[in-house]
Image (cartoon, each protein chain N blue to C red):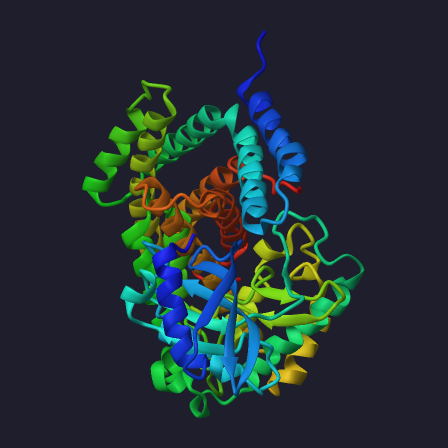
Length: 149
Length: 348
């Protein structure tokens, strides 16, 4: 098995922050810029192995939410789009394609959230709570840790 | 870097401002790190004044080819000027270079503050044993900024003060517009927060203050011995509710993992007490709560703008890449956590 992308990125970050940076004397701008590039590589190492999983997990949660919301007494046009989006199955696993799909689902989520907020019914309150669970899940899936140098 | 032609024009410009007619030489030009909003250079100017040869250090802050947050140099210049002799350490402004032909872009020149260092965002303990002293200084200075009567400062000449009841809407409208313009993808958490903030406006501040607009760890210089030597990066300064600055300074993003401490420096109650003493006004929990959620929205606006600049290849500064990734993720996390726990339709 070859080293993973995360291993490679961490190796590159270590080379920059532990070795190369020490050879840059007297140029604070160059040192700080190299440090930031090193930190970026560490962030990328955290993300590299999990991006597709994060996006698919989030999409599954959004589609499940939309499927349930489509059964609620919302605007018929919105319900139809929720139903359609919940039934779509992702095809490509390329990160760009997955990201584009997530963006489309999130645009629909914003509409759904606004509709839930505008209603005083109990079902709307429950729906809003569910939307926040999904938003929180998405935010937590993406959590990254601040590298220290 | 500054080109040879730009240095020549800078020398001519400064000679008119500083020298008694003799030549002026710019030496030791070095780009400084930090501040993605401006390109920052340090240099020495050697010139003759009152018959004697002098060498003085200066800082030049020039607009990058495409600024992330569109701000006005005149505003930054007036803000620095407004702090002089008012107990707030800030760079002493020397010249405003509005004519882009001089340096390729508008710029401001300030005196260089010696023995002054910025904290690295990646250092786990940037102030070491001086953390407490820096923390006390940090919140005392913020209080002193809030205590200044903005209407008697140069800032009032370049900055329109809102009516007290409009402070919140002016800021929220501005940053919500930036998110709408610059976000590369929907921002469902920020958009929900914006709706929630609009539905729950804060009380009006009893009096308006100067608001630095980006008062955080990283935007001050210290002497590595526990004293803050200067507050920098005044380009987002405006007149508004002082709770705005306090909330931004206390945003968990800047605490670098030490969330139990205000700005990762000192206990929260100490920070607020110090601020109240210096600001000569009371902390207002209701207003603070509104501005603390607003801070996350404002942060998201800045981070999505950074992301767009990178995406469109207009800028390549790795700080923008870092903030458009780490800071955006973190602010979304903070907002989602807070608003998911709040009562329906409320801020808490």
